[in-house]
Image (tube, rainbow, N blue to C red; front, top):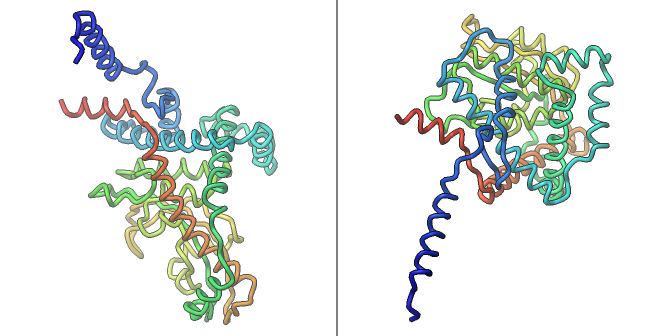
Amino acid sequence: MPRLTTQHTLAGMLLLTFVAVGCNRQPAADVVATVNGKPIAKSELEKYYKGQLGDSQQTPSQEQADSMRLNVLRGLIDEEIFQQRAAKMNLTATNEEVDAKVAEMKAPVSEEQFNQHLKDSGLTLDDLKRDVRRSLTSEKLLNKEINSRINVSDSDVSSYYNQHKAEFNLVETNYHLAQIIVTSQPAQQPQQVSNLQASKAANDTEAKKKIQALKNRLDSGEDFGTLAMNFSESPQTAPNGGDMGFFSESQLRSDPELFNAISKLTPGHMTDIIPVPEGQGSKRIIGYAIFKLVSREPAGQRNVNDPAVQQAIRQQLKDGRSQLLKNAYFEMLRDEAKVRNYFAEQVFKNESK
């Protein structure tokens, strides 16, 4: 075995010292997290945090503010993981695609109304284009990695229909609904938060801010199902993109306010924000919801050859498989990513004193 010289020993010590210093190197003051070495700026975290606060005049406590920032940052980290994977696969949305989407969003309103909406949302046009690029890029990635792998055969459709034939014999008009719901009741256990972002309002003020922020994003053209999976607080529907299934007209009429809002919708459209009472007839509000009318089905037996039945079954089977693959895919991306959440570390350090 060769003998170590003083020079070799000193070099080894210097190397170990360098490694130790490198491992404990502190980030720049304006960096709250890194994803595979790419920083997420404090300014970006604050922009989205303030967006969640909305116009509320009530200032959250330090603990509430830190909790909200942690949830916002988790979303930014997950988004960055997605964007980096898409970039590796050359799927980042082009300037032409972004401009076309922004033009589509501007089409239904005047320039003045569009600019006012940006102002109300606390966004600049550059902010909007950045968010649109991210949304389109994520969509392209999911289409490539998830949707392209899903195949629903005629045999799958027939099998499902035969097993659920009674569901297609409608004695009255049925409404296929989806929801995004936010409650003011804090979760008793972390595992009760079922959305992908682990996002949960802790009180009525937070619930109002959160549902308004989500309504703003829906009005900007973001996908209802994606937002429901990431932020809705219903453990039954959030994992399925907010899908509630079908409700008979008589069921909906038991809640006159809800029926009045939904009966005016055409398929594909959404209600305004609707307060959720603690129980039927109760005046105590425990949350807020936005409902989407997926379809309206008139009374009668539906045949398996009915195009609407075919489409409904295919979509339901596809959505179920898509959600499963998305969850698995996203967990794989998280496992592969090297994430450092400096803000979380700082919160833990401060609260542990």
